Length: 76
Image (cartoon, rainbow, N blue to C red; front, side):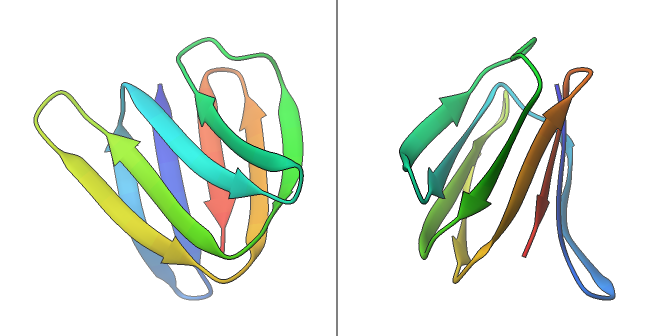
């Protein structure tokens, strides 16, 4: 799945991932490829992106998550 994590005027991460774990206001969720469409509000915590080569961690104070058509977009 293709993942984009962005702030205003800055792409934090963009690329293919095996999974993404995010801290939503309803609890932590892990997104896998072909996840159904979904929108959530993020709370403070770590976003963990697992690619085939590495695991990257990003900090979020708040944000919005959107999943659609095998694409994950996180706006911080």
